[in-house]
Amino acid sequence: MVQKIGAELAVAWTDGAESFFPLEFLRRQCPCAACGGEPDVMGNVARPKNEYSARSFDLAGWQTVGGYAIQPKWGDGHSTGIYSYAYLRRLAEALREGAA
Ligand SMILES: [Zn+2]
Image 1 (spheres, rainbow, N blue to C red):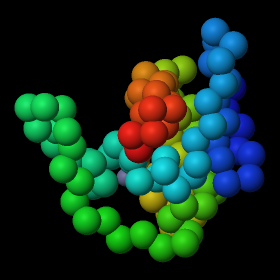
Image 2 (cartoon, helix red, strand yellow):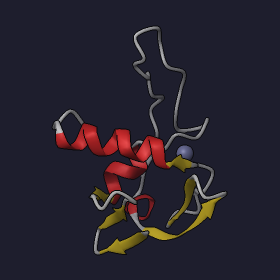
Image 3 (cartoon, rainbow, N blue to C red):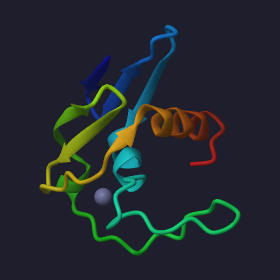
């Protein structure tokens, strides 16, 4: 289950765990081709310089995609990023380790 709570997106996993993603963090990790960039051999992604505004970090809504992902619609109209639950779990781990 996915819920917007204040400036965070809360995801309740099927195993009972919960993750909270700050919206700005989530937008900056947008996996779409325009925001993303290609991973290098080490798996690091060199991100292009993206232009953001305050509205970029406002979540206007989202759709679930085929039961495996969510597709957020941001306040600035950007909505091409598809965040699979596997990707969100990796982001949650990165947050927990303070690497993000
Ligand atoms: Zn994007």
